[in-house]
Length: 242
Ligand code: MN3
Image (cartoon, rainbow, N blue to C red):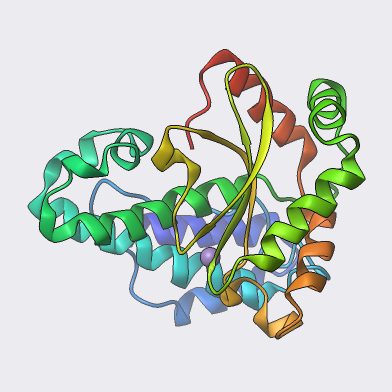
């Protein structure tokens, strides 16, 4: 409860809609169950990505959807405390070690926690354009930034039902595109994620309804390229986690 209140205070202080953020907090669902898994605060206001992603979508997506994955993981950690003591990416790449009765739940909820933690981080207002090493890698592996977007958006549009589309990066800095269902993540296969977009309907339905391709196209306006540059450097240094 304390951390949720603090989070809302920070968000309110950071944004123009301080009063709105605080009044919304009063209507927020029960906070994630206490435990080792924490819902990371959004690094910008819920309306910071407008007009491309609306504030209501961001609020529900972060507080309710991601919040539920965190709460579910804290419940699993009550019976399997080792879940809270092991790096997330290690659990996800060794799901066979998770107890039978909770393996599917951990795959879905910890995958969801990892994916959304990455997702909030790689977005932001005024994210600029790819530059430096990451731009060179994009040009080398896809031909151009436009080609990357075309391939990525195509893979995201073709993903049937709920899922994600990712740009993966290996330790040599080589980039690839991968679409996966549900809350699966390349982390499950020992890979690292440079960036990814959520193509579950909850990520875009209020604004875009059935027009997923329009959402995929608009989403590039809110990608935080300085942050992705940091993630690319970390991937090559072997220190990128989620
Ligand atoms: Mn989502």
